Amino acid sequence: MPLNANTRFPSPIVQINVGLKGASYVINIPKIEAPRITMILKNNEYSLPDFKNNDRPLTILDVGANVGVFAIYGKILNPVNIIHCF
Image 1 (cartoon, rainbow, N blue to C red):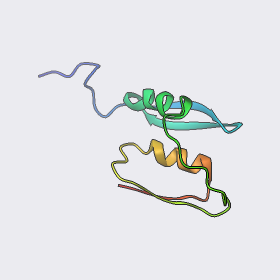
Image 2: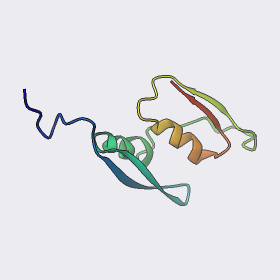
Image 3: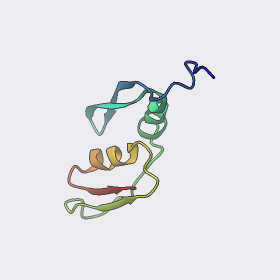
Image 4: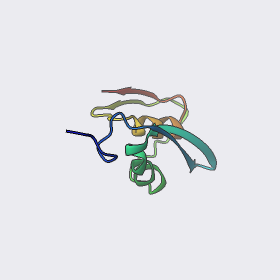
């Protein structure tokens, strides 16, 4: 069965520009996953609790990580966060 444009794997990599917390980030992600960036990062789909001591890194377990968008989000919030993706 021939593949068409909707089922072609692997998906090509695209660059997405995201502005968060007053900074701009360029994220390389599979094209098929690009809409997740808008949904999750730009529309604040994810959130972490506001901890009083933000100087300490958080250790975050991301179970079901898929392409790692939550890991990117966690690092944008605090670059010293430790994130384990499964």
